[in-house]
Length: 397
Ligand code: TV7
Ligand code: CA
Ligand code: ZN
Image 1 (tube, rainbow, N blue to C red):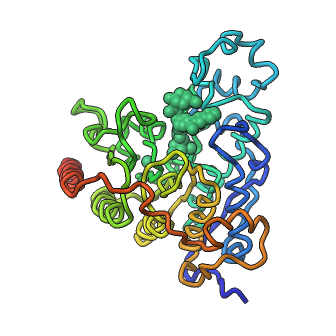
Image 2: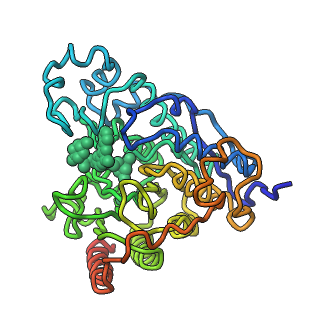
């Protein structure tokens, strides 16, 4: 009745364990698992689940997490609780306001909350499951909106990320795929993934992000950061960074995204792609500073999908929950080829409909123009495109 049908000629799978919704970083912390509840509400109310293979993902095992993370760090995550953490590390109690400690990165950004390990193993398990579906060719596009936590390091939590599900999924893909392309449209730099694959040519990392060294988190990802410098290192030139400033609009972002991603795919010939869809690059995000609309953000998904290469789609940041849900529901519809079928008016009857009242129950509120202007000049954009073109010329085989 809602006109949603399975896509013709390809398969999409959705990987999710609703237990991730039961975890909370803290009252004032910007990361709200509620955005995943709202996303699910929209996806199900639009009937999009009927067009996908839906899996309740299993938690990642200790061994799976240890494929990237250091054993001591996995041990720490699996035993730390809000009750025992100060007994184990009294130093933590004396930390300054707004701190991140040297104890595996724990602090205000990455608090120890109840059920932390269950939360981590569940979002990571969903990304690994999704990667396996692509490897065994049961899916052409696999989606995990609870994943995309791109800052986590081998033995350190960072920027709301504890376990790097993207790195774990890429390692799974590398078992079957010679070359994996990683594309990251979160407003923050994808530093954890970049660092993990810095010295290999089997993964090419491309991140678009706000860059303002020492001011905007995490402070890495300038245009010149393109991999190791040593000529013998295979990773040289296999990292692409697209540093941006405040207020970038749909048109500029779309032009840049196409101008960077198309030549990258045509040069690198990835056999699988991972797309991190952090929704903090939307206008009106609580932490972000860009001006993108839901459609502008979604155009990146449409463009990557158009290459018809096995695709893993993950979430990431996004701090205005109702808009995160709008974006990821719209992007789910793009994945199943139903974006022209969906009614832009939200379903009449759906759980949590009230959460969308402010912008008037539409999937596409106007999110542009809240930061008065786009501070990325035509010259800045052209400089980036030239730099990427020259960089790709170095690796053309
Ligand atoms: C992928 N920005 C993650 C993005 C991670 C950003 C940061 C906060 C923040 C944390 C809070 C909080 C906050 C209103 C915003 C240098 C600091 C400054 C902690 C207060 N309110 C992703 C991480 C970033 C925590 N961190 O890419 C508890 O903002 O800038 C920083 C570091 C030190 C720590 N303090 C912030 O989107 C998922 N944190 C309120 C309560
Ligand atoms: Ca990014
Ligand atoms: Zn982010």
